[in-house]
Image 1 (spheres, rainbow, N blue to C red):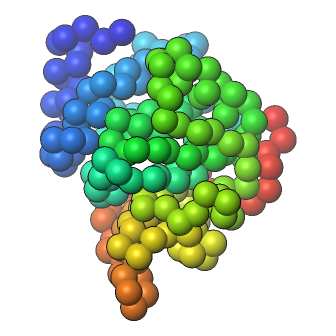
Image 2: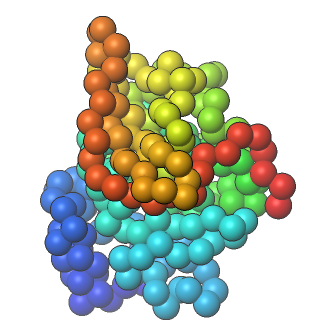
Length: 212
């Protein structure tokens, strides 16, 4: 667990990278990133860097988690879909902001490992599934907010279709080996508004269920 000084340093680091929204900072203060980083990398859990996790995936750097969460502008009654559970860290942060979080990953092992951390933490408003996230979760749609933690070439059509009018999606867009842009998509009565937030690097969004 983080001591008070490490926690102050962690939050200072977030603020210095542009994470200034009080609710986002409050949620990130409540979630110990160290719980989601295993083994040899656990000593670096509070540094602002992405770290490897199982199945060849990564846990995003905290400042990017913060910036994506801030852009999502989650409200207390919102139902949120996360595509790409990964370590579970992003979903745990969202769980402090939203009414309900649905998270999907193509790797069953990641979903199991994340679920066990949620259980240890006593988080009860996250539902984690193994599924092809590029198709979203039609059975639970529509969503107030959608966050995608893997890069697509374009915002995926099935996910756009599952966004409520007035809803927001935050998604990295671009070729996996080039610079990607973090895009905020807002669904309006007439269509979609797109805002580019910053450059990022994420693993590619792949179709199908992953082989472990």
